[in-house]
Image (cartoon, rainbow, N blue to C red; front, side, top):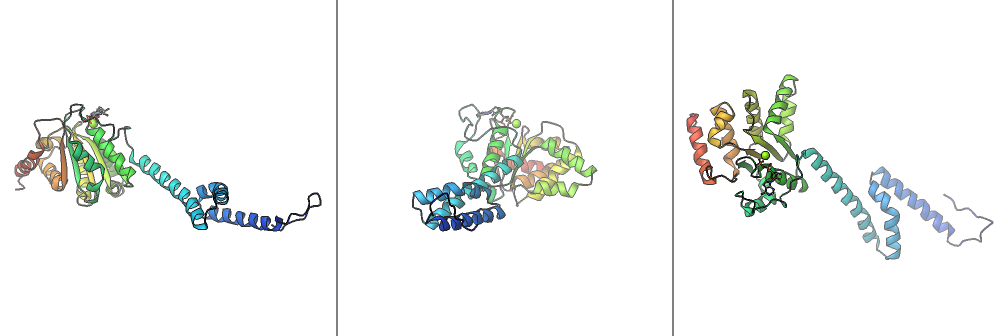
Length: 278
Ligand code: ADP
Ligand code: MG
């Protein structure tokens, strides 16, 4: 915009410069809008004021402006990941009470909370009776994973089976399998609470098999792995599923004397032997 002279005010020696600055400022806002840096655009006046009053260098001013945009972008992405994750409860690892009676090693949970297991595609199997905090811990780990930037999704075994069933009917099987392959952290809660139809067991197997060695699955169950043949209606499918699930895994045997951690390999072996795999 060209500077204009007014008759009502005395000539302002700064006016041309101010007008040029105003034009530059508008240009800058337009650039930010084109680049969709909306938060930076919104905070531009404040940052420029701060730059003037605090005598900030150009570098410091740019850093301050872009930091606002980066923070806002990260907050949006986190909100998106948490929305996608479908966390069923507000449970967090921080509000898990280790003195509440369930047998959970706080050091192991602290280690899992770092998310290192996700980098090695390690699975987590949580076994224990109802109410010991399996879902709480699984959701807490899922929340941590989402907060750490990993694509995360929480479902139940029954929902997974139902969704795969619909997908098969509607000709979306491949898309649905890709969907379950996507998350870096997939929680499948409550295996064993509801009877699983044969095609549900087969869908679960395929989900576990395609994620095997690529990404982590957290599975919770109230049933010992020795009875998964019964849970899945087929000992061969159960053995094949356990084979992949436990190959690289952490097993949390929560609150039970009957299914101790050190037994899980022996149990897998027993089951595989029963299925004729050994
Ligand atoms: P599970 O999945 O093993 O059946 P949940 O995780 O659903 O058990 O736990 C039942 C309820 O008790 C939830 O509200 C959960 O947050 C709470 N809860 C269980 N264990 C603990 C714990 N150790 N500390 C805090 N809350 C717990
Ligand atoms: Mg539960």
